[in-house]
Image (cartoon, rainbow, N blue to C red; front, top):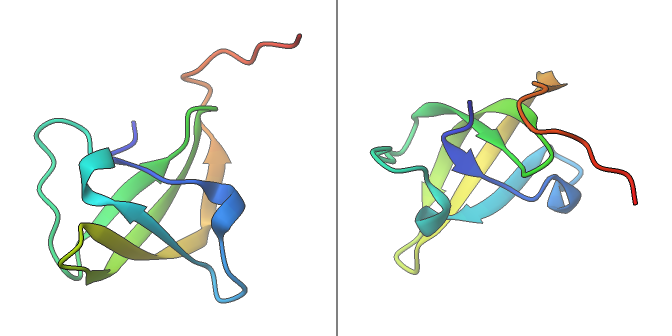
Length: 79
């Protein structure tokens, strides 16, 4: 289960992505150097380490692409 929502379409060449603290799940506290599970609304998740916490609420993360997978918790819907 994810702890912070991210947009995997925004991953840079170094495997980093930025999100917002407001996208953290209820009860999740964010800290520099913390490892957490990030994910999107399609059920794709990945382990990540917080590399920066901006004063504007941005959360910069280094993704562990070896842990990138679909957890199946969200149903895929074709239209």
